[in-house]
Amino acid sequence: MKLIRFANLPGDGIGPEVMSAALEVLEQTGKVYNFDCVTTSFDVGGVGIDKHGQALPNSTLDGCRAMDAILFGSVGGPKWENLTPKEQPERAALLPLRKEFELFANLRPGNLFPELCGLSPLRKDVVGGGIDVLCVRELTGGIYFGQPKKTTLLEDGQKEAIDTMIYRTGEIKRITEVAIKAASLRSKRICSVDKANVLETSVLWRQTVTEWTKKLDPSIELSHMYVDNAAMQLVRDPNQFDVILTENMFGDILSDELAVICGSLGMLASASLGTGSNSLDFPFGLYEPAGGTAPDIAGKGVANPCAQILSSALMLRYSFGLEDAAQAIENAVKDTIRSGLRTSDISMGGSAVTTSEMTSAILSRIV
Ligand code: NAD
Image (cartoon, rainbow, N blue to C red; front, side, top):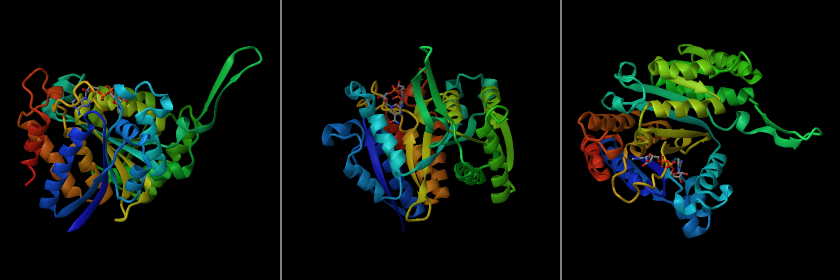
């Protein structure tokens, strides 16, 4: 029996509600696909501040270090909004975790089931068949982190601000490798997005992605697109893409565009993979829903558990190599939606079920 060792960090608001749903689904999936979950829950975010004085307590960090992956809920809420930006739960918990585990690759699946196409702001004739696109974003380089980054006062009294965009070949190669692995589990098509008509970093990006893809897997169908065109093409016809590979800032913008196109935060999962391998020789990763703590519905038992459950499927796929089990969870969610069950965020005014009813329906489909 394979052992799946991961830390679970439910966090605040709806975090604990949807985390317990995901844990139930993982346990059931383990029974069918022959693995045992070994997991410990640790405080993070606002609850970390309240109980330990820190959004990311040392005990939580140590607990995560001892495991092979992190299943993360979400953090923050009105109670902690008056703290300084540096102390805010999201920033004080997620940034150090990204740093500690060198989480350089962000994978954001943009999935819209055909049955939910009414949630998308795009026309039915564009998205009626659903959306299935994966955005692979470089997460630790580029203009958000490059130095110098400063504001200076000029002699003429104006202020001048500088950000610096830097990419090295090593950074581009490793994210390309992640995109290739992800694409090989899908249709083997990658569209690399850059601004190579203007930016030096993009010229290097395009050159490196091309060479490295040819070297690692020549069977990948690689195309390139400028970022301004990619932003347009995503709304014009999202399904022309399969895997989008891009740098940090472009990925930040495009992955949010993709999320909006897909209609509901309650359905979207994400994965952040690190440089290190876990004890099973797969990437260490942090898996979390795309949405936040939803304070407006927290504690009411009506949150949509699908994003957290789908995040756990990504964890099985990328950090434990359990593709069949991951697909079983994804199919169970898909089937549940197809059967007509809806939580209120996706019910479009129709009747809605609770978190636990949705979870039970998903569980009953993993057999
Ligand atoms: P949010 O994603 O929490 O909520 C936006 C809207 O989406 C709300 O109406 C909410 O009810 C709904 N929603 C989100 N997830 C849902 C789900 N699973 N089921 C049903 N409805 C869902 O964003 P916000 O309101 O901007 O932020 C609330 C708090 O969450 C803030 O403190 C913010 O800092 C934090 N936040 C944390 C993370 C994170 O931990 N990674 C991400 C985003 C926001």
